[in-house]
Length: 374
Image 1 (cartoon, rainbow, N blue to C red):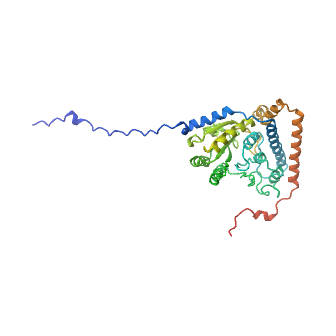
Image 2 (cartoon, helix red, strand yellow):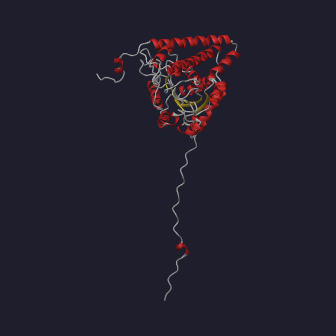
Image 3 (tube, rainbow, N blue to C red):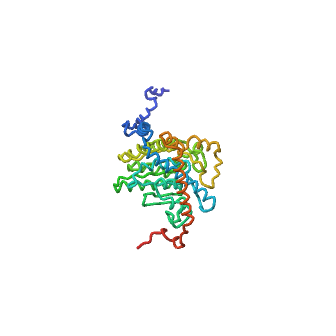
């Protein structure tokens, strides 16, 4: 029987696999476009400045403003305990240097501010009358929102202060809208949008980062990291606890700042605001701070020890630190005590004003609710 022809070795080989396309490699970024470079560059610029060279007059102003917030919030806590303030009440005690350091660098004629529900301190930092703030807390007609906003929903279009928002993180998206308005109107203003370490994990925050970067909006995002959000340590709730890095993937440079040092905060504000005003886009600032009270007046704060809180008061208090600097600059203890006395008197007057102001009339329930069509 004839043999079958042998297959050549060549014909026995498996067909060669199609060659794989080389993976696409993005062109190298120029340093000015590299988000990591941007992050480090802005931080380096801040490190070079680090401390604001404040005059004696400016330091005294910062001291008085922070002390006003502290004494006002202490009085608000007392009124809450007496039942004169209802609902929620979130005190700003311990975080005063953040609001004063940042808002002292704003242009009050052009810039806008929006924040969350811990807003009394921000309004006082803006120079708004303590009488109308305390009247709002107590639900009185003379309040800045006519007694209908309470602790969490204060508002002043006159001062370009757009709240006071109770929905966690919602103010960030609204801040993006305010920044878009600044750009559209070409008014030269920027928006300062505050949010907390708890809100930093909200999806709408990152949607706003993306849009702000795409549209090159004039906005400074400020994370007030008081380390515990509503009651959970950031170490337990956040995979990335250095919040100033959260904008890197959106090409938003970040800055890490000691939020317990008002002069460092002001120095950081100078760097961040200049970056935005120069048309370079948004900035993300992480202000490391610490609230002495619980999340709200109803929070017993059992998630941290009394010793931890006392250590913060003893070694990191922003008011005491500036007080020492003022004494070193030649101010006397008696001078500073007289300032404290005057501020306590002013806060007591605000409380008396609020208690003696009438509550809103019933028809006020129906105003500012809907926009009527004409």
